[in-house]
Length: 481
Image (tube, one colour):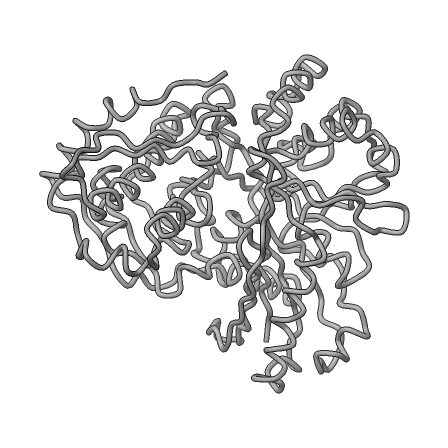
């Protein structure tokens, strides 16, 4: 038996997986995000621990015998968050999250201070990444910076509590701007540029490697026969890739979670930081992931649900299973700023084309189309890096909507595929990494592709209509700098 724990932005999800790679049980607990001022997003790390422990307590109550047999645990998590710990490994402040835009000025400082940043990290300095957040803390909260003895990403903090070990995997570390992505090791020059050293960093491992063991007292709490091994794990999107078997070049997938991304595994670095392509180490040794990332995806639908005072299911039901024509309304999904291709934390969303005849369905459809258009931007910058997308699998909560996947197929003009249980892909991928850390099995034998339950083909009429709409949609973007 193996556990996968995904520390997401909106929830902690834990799955229990047997030796036949069947999900036996799953539990989820919600997380709250606070915004102390516009553009700032934070979470209290203690709620991550409470939520994760609650999922495990619930699994013990419902599947105690299976939980007792767990041999390996894999962790996945939201990337980029800055969790600052003191000498006693206690958080000094709330974690600054991946979608936080406060450190735009620090990004410019960092690139001037360290000109080799893009060549070494494969990425452009953006407020979402971890390193600029530390420069912001040093400038605005100097006492906190001075007291910081250890900087961890969210899931590494969870591992620290579970095991007592400060360890991070190279895929999650890639989103910090402190990693030399070619060498898969910390960059001393990157750390020095933010006033830090290796002493402030966790030990690095590959995602499928053993990293630690669960504390004995916690193994007893959950009735486990012996303390399981905890794998290196992965950032949420690399873990999702492992969960759907996207471990080879030529595969691509879309993540429709709180944020969104179009991702392609590669066996070489195909960096394009000037166009805001992300370069991350994969959770699989010797592999990387190139990605275009958008800050708001399924969270746009959640916003619309709040706006209309309805559930997401109630918004989607009237749309049917596929669009007949593009919505007359256009939506920019920049509710929290944007990464690819704009790198603009200050831009905000927009509804355009409203009239007296506009109804709720037109607005909801425009929200789904706006996210798909943003992913088309990601497709085009990946193409500039030499990565052509011929088809894409879809994971994340948004993958439950046939209408949305129909829109996505026609906007991207490629077939898109849905899996059963695709919304738990990151937790399932983490469980696979937990298994590999225990057994050392061949990676391709375990990281197989789940059965696709449905394929959405592009509709030729809609492909042309969306292609005609896309340039006008792009013209709506106006920088607010």
